[in-house]
Amino acid sequence: MANNSNKMANNLVMSDIRQRVTFSIVESYKNIRTNIITLMDKKDAKVLAITSPNASEGKSTTALNIAITLSQLDKKVLIIDTDAYRPSLHKKLKITNSIGLLDVLTDQSNLKQAIHQHNEFLDIITCGSNAPKPSELMSSQKFDELLAKLKDEYDYIILDAPPVNPVSDALVIAQKADAVIMVIRAAVTTHDAFRKANKALEVLDIAIDGVIINGSDPRPKGYYKSKYSYYKSEKSYY
Figure 1: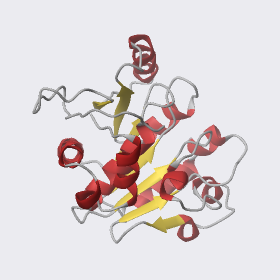
Figure 2 (figure 1 turned 120 degrees about the horizontal axis):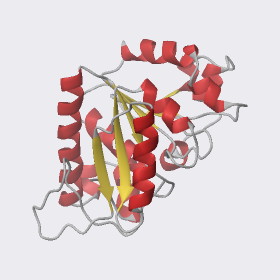
Figure 3 (figure 1 turned 180 degrees about the horizontal axis):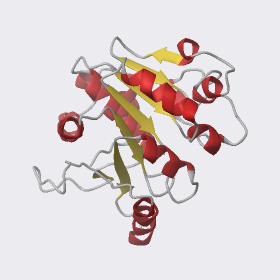
Figure 4 (figure 1 turned 90 degrees about the vertical axis):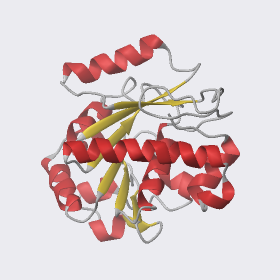
């Protein structure tokens, strides 16, 4: 379970986490990283989709911080914003969204133009310009071919997917991934919302490989639940 307060979250995605956030937050993401690496190694997989039942459950910040922590192992990591309705990675990283995934899929730009380098080991592709029928673009063979090409260049590819319940795009994107993690928020995500999202994935025979709980109380210290550690947050991002 990964989470962060407003200030801490910004520090984590914008700066050196060892200097700017608390030890517990760093360790929480390291624990998540360990579990993800184990999961992906067992599956011999590279593409991980991170989604949530609904908006405002901390999914995009969690995805970005996971990408950062993976890159700190000197692994070549790419995170792609695939949420055509509410793209947010460019806002969190304060980079332009003028050229991104949708521009590549519609042949408006090439892949090289769409890639932003965050550090030596982490690259970002934002969602890009508005395009008609984004679901069709995400389900296209062109996207399959793009992911196949990127797999040859990166150790891990993180797909920051839309939430499952509001739009169908998340189901399309989840089918492109080797593994899927669901982010939920304590005291915000309802059981019905989680069950609805899980059911939608099950209908397409898509398994949830892990759940990250945002906004949980960390007390007592050292307590772990499910596959991942967690810690308290005052505010989360979508």
